[in-house]
Image 1: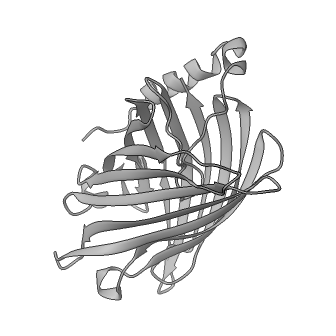
Image 2 (image 1 turned 60 degrees about the horizontal axis):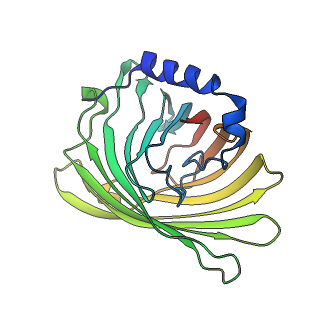
Image 3 (image 1 turned 180 degrees about the horizontal axis):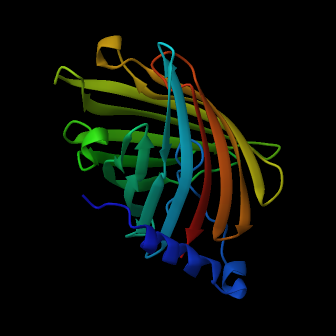
Length: 259
């Protein structure tokens, strides 16, 4: 397993803080895939590297027993062409009651296929191909390789509003060892209040399936992001579970930097 390396991430973040201001001023503002569930249709660009890291806390109560899981979600993105990027994603270090360890790692590719056009309301489109690997600590390890395919479509609307949708499918294994296919569908509405500050509201079906396969995981999400510079972002978000198959609450605070 390619486990998270805190010292590497810390060094990378420190390097980002030391980027010359003159260089940052020439940059177009970075596009991140957090803190909402709907991914951005944008890629990082040829030979560009982007880190999106965070801390998160998830709370749930089942049959009167409350559990809290703390994690460090992190996404690494590297551009191999102007339209494609390689991706490595993990929930990082996890602590859940008495259990402590590392989450599985997901490897993937994002392919930006279409640019948007505001005048014709043509959306910007990207495809994401991922595989979650059973690489984590025993307490947090999934069952085998779990592939997924998602499509992202984004529209820039009037009054600095935006709309994003993300349908997809994933393949997983239930507790009986049987493979199943689940749907994915999320919708987000965003508002840019200034060039640097934006907010969003979202409904995210992260897993849409029958009860025997774990049930549908659906959240109501809200959050905000602030650009410290064209290559650095701070963000925060909260999620509320929509049903008994979904954790009750989650909050996250994140930092992203582009090189």
